[in-house]
Length: 97
Ligand SMILES: [Zn+2]
Image 1 (cartoon, rainbow, N blue to C red):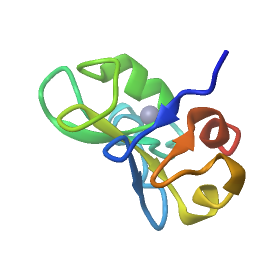
Image 2 (cartoon, rainbow, N blue to C red):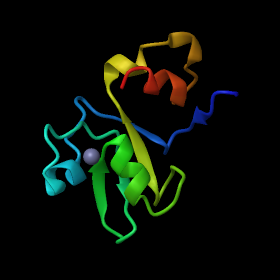
Image 3 (spheres, rainbow, N blue to C red):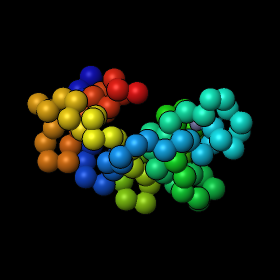
Image 4 (cartoon, rainbow, N blue to C red):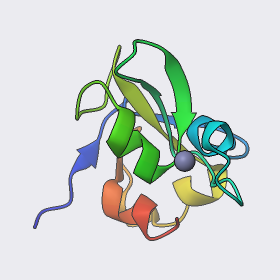
């Protein structure tokens, strides 16, 4: 399968991954790190780990109005050959979860 390219508007670089809002709300211990900042089915925006993003996202895609994948500076530099301007493959990110 071809790696899927993430475009500007699909990813946001953060200094550190926040904690998943849904893990916190449901008492999941330990709460996982959020990998997405996304709009949920109830219309609210929140930070979610991979599992909670898949469960609660309004639409199964990233972009303006839908959600962004969160990455840290370390991950941005993880595989320089795969990077274009603002691009990173999902595979490169997932290996660093
Ligand atoms: Zn979670």
